[in-house]
Length: 403
Image (cartoon, rainbow, N blue to C red; front, side):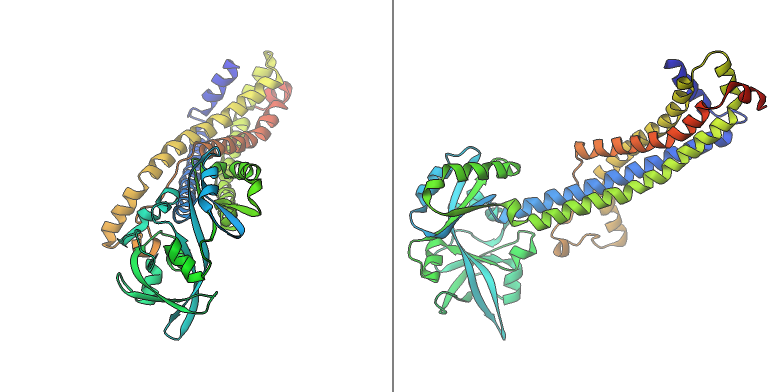
């Protein structure tokens, strides 16, 4: 095998007759490198956005929700039992419902939640998202998203009038705080008050809708969900929803988009693989006499096959290494490049008031890198098979007479 590997590299070196072959091999390497580089950068950015959006999904909301089919009293007993379940680190009761807001001639609904201001920061990142005011509110105060505040034209200390769908009566609340989660869905349609404030608003006494749950690993929520059903089966009818359940369609769309982008961008590597095939075909045609001599001195068909497969793989591996180095380096310096372009054009390339972030989120995942490397290596191998097979089928007598 070492002899075949040595010959494969020797055939790639530039000689008087093989300048065009060496040039074609170099172009093929560059093509493979560019394909790998683009794949790494795009997949890293998409993975970064996945992580960014997941963080926002489980930021305003808890990781899991235990929802009672009918509102329930004495939720703290249920919350205490939930905290004994493996991986559950914090719980907080909540009330969920809808409220109507009149804004000029328009009447629209918003999500209206009752929370415990002291326990809520333990199950969500809501406290971190507060941009003005405070989350520590009284029963007649509310915290709402900045986008909703802009739509209503209200600020801290001003009054918001809500109509309860249960009583159809209007209730006035003072704005205690504003939050910005980076998710327009929540920033434009969520208002929160205390548990007692929500209970009075909906006229439900001391009842709550459910228990918000925080876990130590958001990717184990399905297993934890099963444990909750098994452990809490005696508390009556309830349903457990995870952050995955609440955002399943959105997460599936992100996953599909990532897969489709990977397939589309892999086509650039496939195009570069045609260059490998062309290089090997030219190498075989220029080395027919050498192949005949090798066969005459006892080289087996498998040895000839290995020479040209190694030649194709060496082009692919070199391109992969160049692409990996360039792709990782470009991904790590992507935000520096964005900042440089922003300075050149004298305005932010990514306006924070539009995108809710001023840096491109990136995430270099080892698993993604392995998939890219394996796919590119497989494409390089497939591109090498036919030229190598053609070379292995050349008979010694025909090869020696060729020149």
